[in-house]
Amino acid sequence: MSAPFRIEALTPQHDRSTFDCGSDPLNRYFRQQVTQDARRRVTACFVAVEQGKGVLAGYYTVASSSIPVTDLPDEVTRKLPRYPSVPAVRMGRLAVDRQFKGKGLGAAMLADALERSLKAEIAAYALVVDAKDEQAAAFYRHHGFIALNDNRLALFLPLATTKELLERKN
Ligand SMILES: CC(C)(COP(=O)(O)OP(=O)(O)OC[C@H]1O[C@@H](n2cnc3c(N)ncnc32)[C@H](O)[C@@H]1OP(=O)(O)O)[C@@H](O)C(=O)NCCC(=O)NCCS
Image (cartoon, rainbow, N blue to C red; front, side):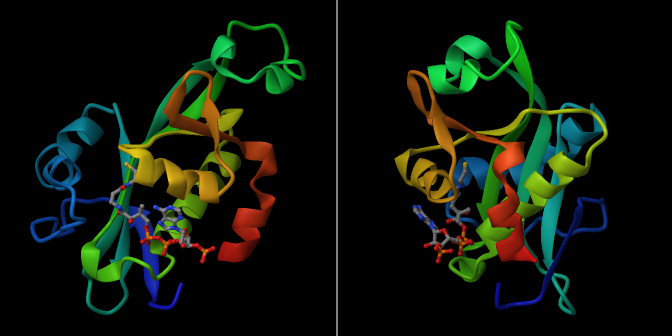
């Protein structure tokens, strides 16, 4: 990542009004709805802040979730206990402001979400993501995510296999 950013929890002091990632639904959610969802504890939101200037360069949301084992590929379920589902952290949204794209920030926020999930004391088997379209799914596949059965836009990455991504960030 070339520009200096810090990633921290969203607070009311952050100015979300000018954020523009090029996707209207992701912009609208961030500007109008995310604080309400956070207050109701249905999601947590983390933001990337450009050091010195305080500009919001990106955000992602995460919440606890689960994956039905029938959605996981056979080679994965063979190594898991016979529970109906496994615990997961769901990254519902990830977005980088247009002026900061292509600088490694999307990858850095993904790594941050993986790191927070790994550090949490409550266990999760994987980070699961909802890609908004095929291009977003390609971004996640580039980082090692695997599609869930029958849904190319929902992908997962077992947290035990995230070492390489985290090393690239640190
Ligand atoms: C997808 C998105 C988050 C990527 O963020 P970014 O900061 O521009 O991406 P980065 O600079 O961190 O890219 C990191 C790596 O991913 C690759 N990459 C980026 N976008 C990619 C894509 N769509 N498909 C495949 N690879 C991609 C880059 O080439 C780079 O590879 P490298 O590390 O091997 O050189 C950003 O483009 C965005 O906000 N898009 C609109 C919203 C969106 O689609 N969100 C996705 C989930 S809903």
